[in-house]
Image 1: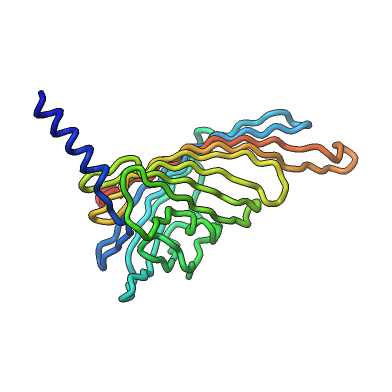
Image 2 (image 1 turned 90 degrees about the vertical axis):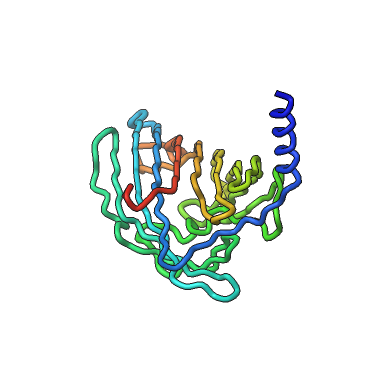
Length: 251
């Protein structure tokens, strides 16, 4: 028992003192496959129609593959949606938009997106830049960093995400995150996202990522002669997102 406790303490001390540099890496002819699941419940409340609740589930299967890599480490990566299934209030709906469409991004090893070369229909250019960007210096357990990003659509908002490396093992790290939004257009928006990501720092790829998001905002509703000018639709949204690395056989 004493030997076990000593070993655990030693491992803990090594974890605290050990530092790793986190970077993404893609290899030629070795695509990565991911499954993305989004579950959300939306509530809409308006003066004329009362309250409406919509439950939606979306599951995507995607491929990421390297197109080219420069000597400086800059990568051109293709991201393709292979399959998509969506249900609304328990009923499956057609969801063909974006399937087999490819988005190509230029990115640095730390995750910073330099440009989006092709665009998946219906996707905001800012979405690719919302992935986790790692600091350029090495990190230890307990290290924190902040990522700030301005988004223009669908509402002008500033996102501020605080990351913390909460666990460091010989092969992977666990990173917690809290993201808050600040509306730059003056509209009332309450939002917060909490998440956790497991990253393989040896093979330099995401293993899994989970996020729980809650949003609350108001949309002006103007119907001349029928509703007061200050009428608004109150919207609340609770969304859970899961991403996990899968094998090609799981497609």
